[in-house]
Length: 262
Image 1: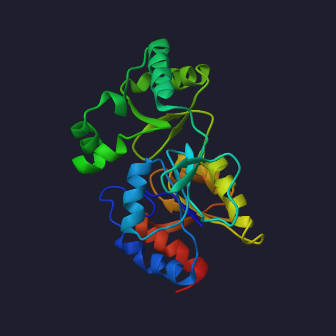
Image 2: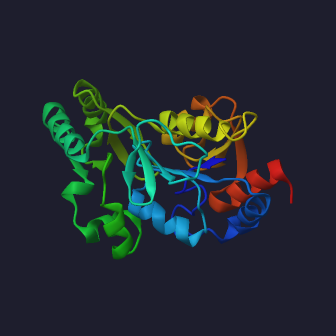
């Protein structure tokens, strides 16, 4: 199964996950892999993998790269970059290229923006409601730049200008993001293909709460829309999605138990 983190497995405001523990333990007992598919950086995601005792592949920065623990699959994928204990398959554009494109789009559109690269650690911590230490990890970006739009009335012009630079944009729970020719779907598709080398009949449960999750949710056999302020937009983007009654980890727990039982 594949899951977003913020606002889904983790509470949007507090990052708590206690309400999802029954489902997490059930998946652990049954040996069902949990693939994180997130806008978080590798550094952030590694922390959550330790906290949640996760040892499965993970997707970072809105599909920018897939990190596969070395030796996880019977045969390695073609073309990975070896980085520490991971085989890494990169889809995203380099971070400096993205920040340059964002500055250019801002200039062309006359719309002011503030990206992570323009913010101090304290400002990122405040904007994301996280500790300073967590903010430092969030700023270790490689394939995606989150940003705030400061001139809301020129949002359309900015997003059009991003497209003219050859980059793409998406929107998460708190920020817009500029990315290269990558999204969560392409990365998730590759991970599913790798799992099918182990079990050709594998079926995928997907969980997400924001529009940046729509692409990978549409690939899932059973897509769950974890209740959030973006629910109605997400319903339109994922017509087959199943909405949970509860938000955040409560909704995550509800969805998993509905599929795999108590």
